[in-house]
Image (tube, rainbow, N blue to C red; front, side, top):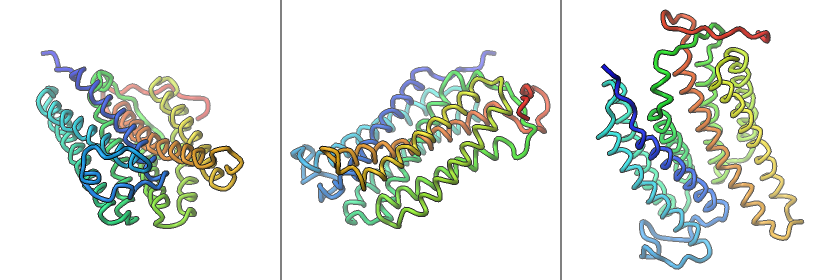
Length: 312
């Protein structure tokens, strides 16, 4: 009997939802970077209306709310669609359906936290939680896009084996956790919960771990295109993130020589924030790909041993 395949249209819709979520993160970063968080003093309406005048900080704050509402609608459609059409084997069917429900719950909670940031006058703990949950929602939707792809189903049973220690699974999980903690530190810094030193220390740890994971992927699995591409992607993203972080810090002190220093500072800061989200999502997707392709050394039948590398 033929195994049911993922629904291609659901996959495309999940990709579209993830792309819109990325735009939502950009909009949120613009709100914070332009100090527009309290430009609209009420919630859920904006000055008691769905269509306030889009001037000054209202443009950023209300625009952010409109994009968030649109992403919320997409999340409802995605959750319902997954529940109705997911037709693979029961274990996959169950957890993927519930992952769609979890994504919907996350965006609802995200909206409530967004309202609380206004009602509590940008309290750092609430604002930071709002920013962090946005990153988790982005990672969840991107994961759904991967799980619903034809690639994910085609790789069933095509196991590689990892004989090294620590295992690639351990390395990627530690890296994902470190990136997430770093994003918490970044959100707390942006919302003035504490200074920059913890964030800088976190950046050092994350950079080291990403280079460690990328190096392990290249050395252990040189003949696997997906893992080679993952290593290159991680290297590129962390390199760009470090450059953007340095440029954003520099712009706060030395961008006065530009004709529009505020615009330069805002652009660099927003780019740094959304690149951090991409680093998190990429590390999560790399971890999922590793779990899909690689089994520990103790795996038995059905394994494909990676070609040894001279570097080992």
